[in-house]
Amino acid sequence: MNFSQIIQSFIEESRLLLKSGHVKADDYKEFLKNISEEKCPVCMEKLEIVSADEKGNVAKYKFKCGHSHIHAKFHETIVMREHLKLKLKKPGKGLLLQECQGYKSSGDPKLPNGVTEKMIIDKEKKEYHHVVIDNSTGNIIHEEHEPLTQHKPKKK
Image (cartoon, rainbow, N blue to C red; front, side, top):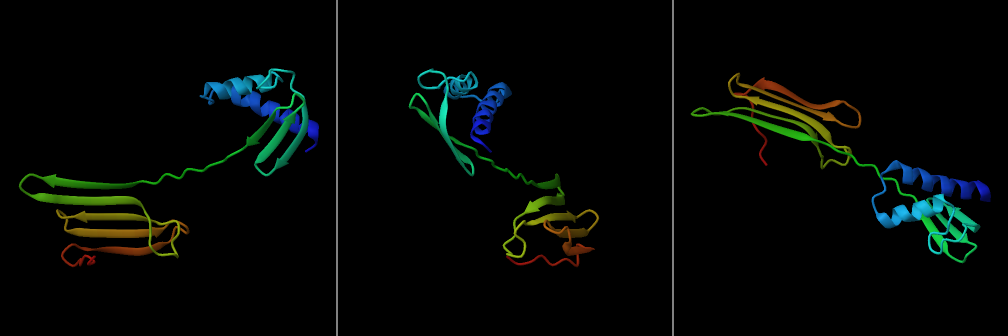
């Protein structure tokens, strides 16, 4: 990218950020407004960039008036996962149904993305179902379907 393209990109990014409505801090809004109007955000002189240096996500700008600006870009990805548990109880009968389903982290280094677990303990139907799926491959790594009377829970 040549010098004039860097300058235009900097000014255009400032205009887009200002128009987006996502900028909340008043000082930063004012800064973006000044840049988009091609004014130095410090002294309000006409914005003339005398040097620009871009390396990776960081750009350093020096203005003719003597002020400078360092512009850094950040990108983050947020991953959300859920794990739901349900218990159905009846007065006088106690726990009738227990279900859990969703993401679960794994202590196994072979499963860095964790697993999806689906478990149903149905005391009315006397059934136990447990399925564990590798989140990386989608393969079933554990599956049990048996009468509750034959199920032996693992000791912790």
